[in-house]
Length: 284
Image (cartoon, rainbow, N blue to C red; front, top):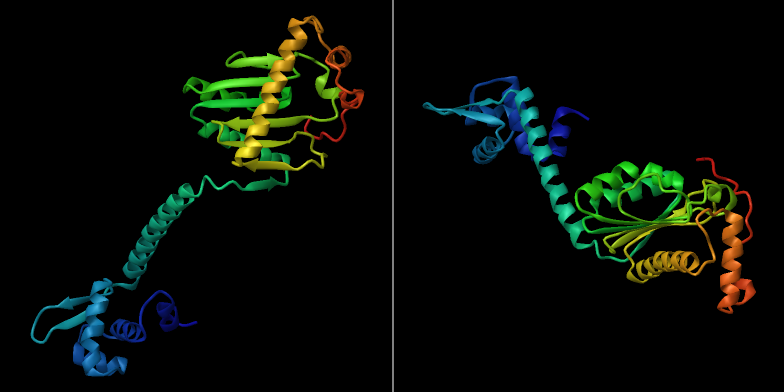
């Protein structure tokens, strides 16, 4: 593509491109001379030159007759780039505003990888302004400690449920403190809820086939919130009713759960999974 064609791609009309290129070849020129060199009619050349003035592509030279000179093409290109960047910035702001108005859309976004899950959780922590509820494991607790600390220091209320010891002391903790939990439980599901408006749910095991999702769906948010609250309630029930002592491992936990479920006459088929060595976690 030649310069004439490229100028047309950047919004110059056919006659504007012809006049500017004519002036690059020879300047200054009168309107009559421009029309002759550019091979356009005299009736059109003056309107064309005015449009080029408004685009800061040509400069009028006052006199009798008036003459015209081209703006140096390097300066023209620099101005075009600046104008383009400003328009792109304005477009981004406009689209950001549109995106903000659509944030209540209750879609469910699937995430393909553990890294994407981590990114979403970190983003949620950084943007939270009121509360954060987390159900996580020691590995992720360490991973998110720094952004959680920043959130806590700016006044965000943090509640953390975990089967494992939690490696930081700020916020509200509800932990069984089981040092063998991550090795024995086949799942490491993570739930993160930010300001009760959006959430991330997924398995921390890299080899897991469980879908990881991000959503603002109110029904799913309510169920996830209930899951964390019920885990906390069960934690207090087992502790306060004597089913568990201070030193807890997975074996003791499963026995306590079995006794508790039997006491409330929950069918045996709903008992927790058997303890086993977790597999597929390449992030350990």
